[in-house]
Image (cartoon, rainbow, N blue to C red; front, side):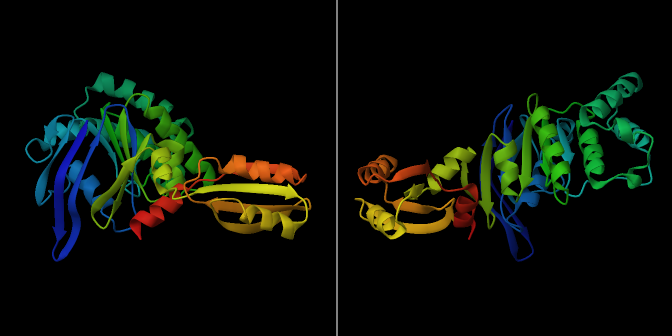
Length: 308
C-alpha cells in the first residue's frame, strides 16, 4: 500500500531525509518512530502530498505522490500532529464541511457522519463546539474527519501526544479497531505506543531508516546477551558467589531484596541454557528458589542503541 524508495529532503542546508526507503503492506499497523527531529513528520508530509521530496519516489495505493497527488489524497486519511481543527465549529458542522470538500454525496454524507461518530465515540460531543472539547475528544474529531471518506490508508502523526493515560488507552484501542480494516502508519516517539498498537515498527534516526521489524524482532536484535532475574532464599554472599561461578556468566547485579530473599540479575554471553544452569546451581546448594525468569532487551534499549 505504501512504497518509499530512496527519498531525500533538504531544508536549506539542513538535510531532513537521507535516502529513506520502506514498504508497508495492506492491513498492517506500522509504527514509524524516532527521536524528535529524526524526519518522521517530513516523511508523513511527503506521503500526504503536503511537501515534495527532492529526490526518490513514493507511491501510495499504487499512485505516485508526485505525479498523482489528488488520487493519493482520495485514498488516505490524515491526522496531522496536534489535530488542527476549526475550534469555533460544532462537531457535526465540521464533519459536514470536510465531507463536502471531499465531494461526498449529501445522502451518503449524513449516513457517514453518523457512522464515524459512532466509530470514534463522539456521541457525547455532537452538540458542542470543537473548542469546548477536551484534547482527547479533539483527537477523536481528528480521527473522524480522517475516516469520513472511507480511505484505504490512515496516516497518523503523533496521535496521542499530550493526552492523559486514559485518553491514550482510548485512542490506542480505537486505532487497533480501525486497523482491522485499514492500513495504518503511526508516527510517534512514544515507544509503548508501538508495542501496544503496532504489528511492525520502522525506526528512523537522523533522516535514515536504521531498523525495521516487529517489536519482538527488534527486541531480539538488541539482546546482546542472555540475562535472567533470580530470587533465592539463602545467604546472600554465598548465593552471589555461586551465581558468579556459573560457566559463561559475565556479571551478577544485586537487586532489591523481596520478602527477605536475595534477588539478582545474572548476565552471560549467548548462553541458551542459562536459566537451567542457574536452577541447577541453586538446587544443588539446597537453597529455596522463589523466582527465575529470563529478561531480554526492551524496545527502549534497542531504540537508544540505534538512535544515539
